[in-house]
Image (tube, rainbow, N blue to C red; front, side):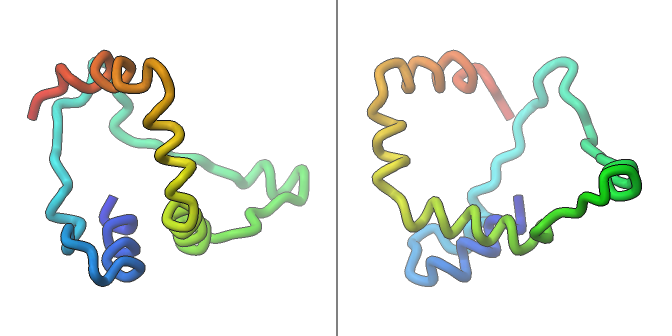
Length: 96
């Protein structure tokens, strides 16, 4: 979360939402929500000779930049029939 906010602060210096980390709102987790996600890619590396092309930092930067470069894509998603209903169904009851 904070990494994305730091990138937005850097890439959008004129944003009225700076610092973006101030927008973070902690909410109650849904029942059964995992507290931690961890992956061990050792087997991928040793058995398949696979390694990631990008580090987390470079991949995150590229992803954030893509969304900033294509605002029309986000607008199209928001205009899709049922999108607002989906948001309400999945997020309206989440309290802090």
